[in-house]
Image 1: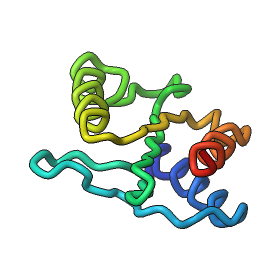
Image 2: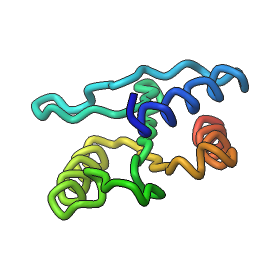
Image 3: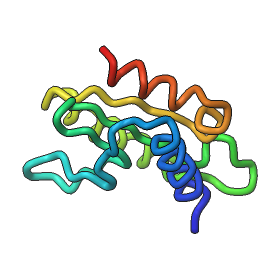
Image 4: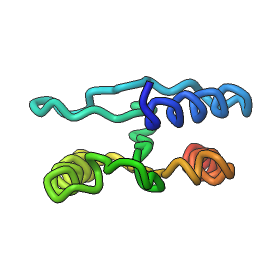
Length: 109
């Protein structure tokens, strides 16, 4: 299991513990592209992306390479154009509780 998958599992657990509506995982949001969200609440047009490798000194993440960053920009732009609100969180945010706070705020707007 990758570092990103560990943090996704942790966030999924936190979502259950605090009693938030269960999201769809690996949700394919684009009608043509192969873009997926880590977590999605389609009825709310809310998505959460756990950005892996942001605090890792051991290895680079796809998200921190030039091409990976550009691909993410395309994905997030396509999501915005389709009306999605996308929250991007890091492992540190998952660990210290800020990620779940952002999700709670977004779902309660």
